[in-house]
Image (tube, rainbow, N blue to C red; front, side):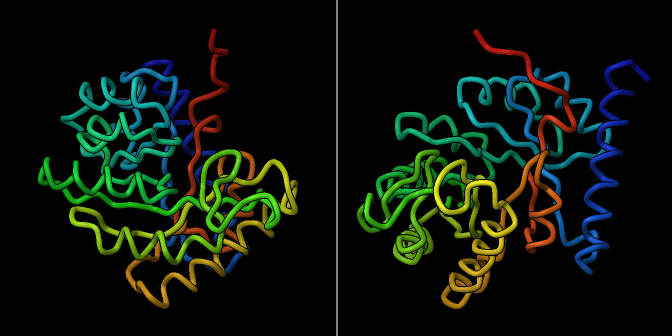
Length: 244
């Protein structure tokens, strides 16, 4: 075993222990929570090692990094999740490799994703990214948060658009823990709010039961709240090098 493989195996084992312990504490079964490893800034070689170690879900947030990496790893049994803010001029590339786009937050993006999914004859899973960092008075209905995402009052309309769009599948909701606003520093409360919003969404779209929340620092809170997927990068791959 190479040094890097041993390092990643050890890190994965620690993360697995954390998820398992969080499930026990929450009275949940371990299989209710799926680990997505966020591989941004790390090379295809690391993705290949992760696959060898049993990882099946990986995530990226920048198309210019993700596209060549996904191509280099196209022989691996992986599901690719796109989790970054997505510009419409990157949609054609992203639809070429992503199985799920977790950052759907506006109607124009839904239209672009649908058109491209149909063109490429693909079914693309979509999560509505929810923003809990905006104040009611500073954004119109469904206004976007600072890190992307739609306000809670925009979920129903946007979810309906995704559900009706050819080539798209409404899978559920995603959140990035807010850095500002009423939920700043209150990750558990933010994730619990997301679960309430998920319940509302599932009343109209029962199959949209995926809830993506929690990262390296707050995965325990996400599991406690009921998240079905956690997105972990640093705890598995190490501290990322500074860019620039």
